[in-house]
Image (cartoon, rainbow, N blue to C red; front, side, top):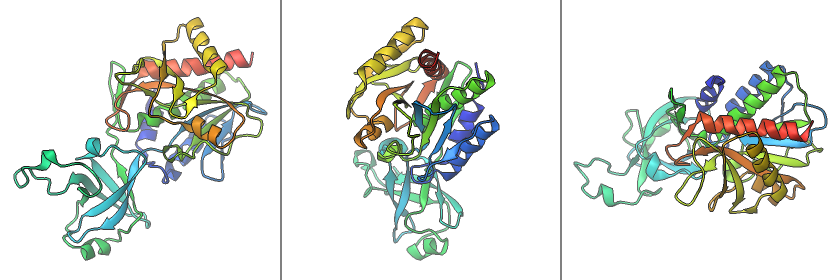
Length: 337
């Protein structure tokens, strides 16, 4: 089984949606180190052709959840607005980094207002929302002017610590497996195909605005006909997926994916003994959804490793990631014999 060092390195680079330049630079440089020729799109996404005139794009998104400063309170704490669908209940108590426009960084914690149980016996009954929560800075600040003197302003980026953990039994616990695990799938496709000196008409596409709905809308090569999106597989009481399989999405909240595309993916999984689950995701959209809404004439499929507790304290497994890599390679082999 391959090393997961590149996954950990990418996870540990802050990349909340709208603040992805460093992560995209890491991807660009990694692909170059494999002997490939990546490019940036105008919006800052990274794409990389693995052969001439690519007709198949395989996409994953590097942007993650996060927040921005939306105000400075009179007591020296920060108001915030989320970037993407961050779950406030699961984010309570998390350590954060605040990055100013000048590049200076401060640390802090996302907390409920009046958070001490010894001072607030109603804390467990209170709703978690923008009005009832704040960022506590790890600085001696007690007034708004104290914070202003630090150079913190509205719009400064708030990044959450991912807490990456990789275990000997194959489980990986970390925030942002949605969708840095998908990016890792693309890393491995690039590395393995390059090692085999195999050129194929495939474009790898790392979008950077998926969490806000427009990452997959533009930037593909003009020759693309099919889009295979690699994103997290949903786990839940009404879903079949699990962390050790590749999930194949039949339909999400935007509608069904291409029937013949997902049928072929299922057939190839059966033929190659790749563990997979077919699923419907009731509250989900992807770069494939965005591409179709933007009017792209693509046949679109969606697959990915199962990820537990999405947008919260996420977990996946190397078996699910390897199954996804295996299915991508099987589809490439089937399509470009």
